[in-house]
Image (cartoon, rainbow, N blue to C red; front, side, top):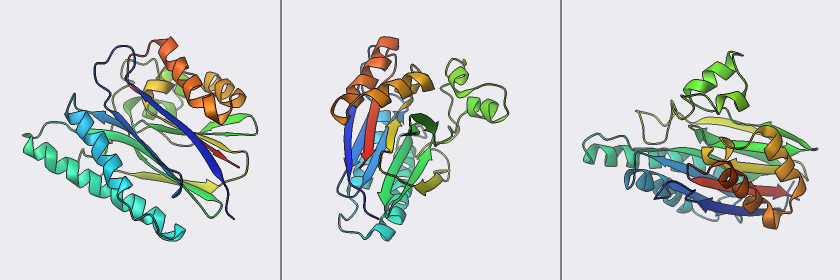
Length: 238
């Protein structure tokens, strides 16, 4: 089954940071979308997130759907190796990026991610977090000690345990499932979800047309303080 898609996207430096270390990629013809949140400080974070985006953007545009998913994973693994090599050239400094990617094909979706950038789905007026953060506080959530909303306010909320470019392997996790008309997906860096609860995201996504929904979500983050870079992609399935 082939679905049509529409999307909107925005990235913003926020109210505090001097440099935007986030990057985004939208390839609607290939139905590939990606958010990368760079880490390691100016230049390092920029390099990491842009390397991920550039590597995925270089995928052949005419791959059949069944090959596109493996090609996406391969590109993320290649980006990991490129960032690891750059880190070694810089004397072993921490360079990396939290990444979440979405690919749609044949009536299904797949997502690859590492770190704490997220993928949500709004379906039938209910919002669901499809990814699970690779972070210290995520372990507390999985153990039932707190909710995801509570984890955003924990002192260690920014400490991630996996990232593209850090460690021997990228540590990619994958989820897949069916897609139905009316599904709305949200990919974002943690600059959004640290300021927006599940209910805030649900209300904002439920009520806005695709042309304005990304800007509406951005305003939530800015109104909440905007202390981090903010990157948002919303994808509608028609």
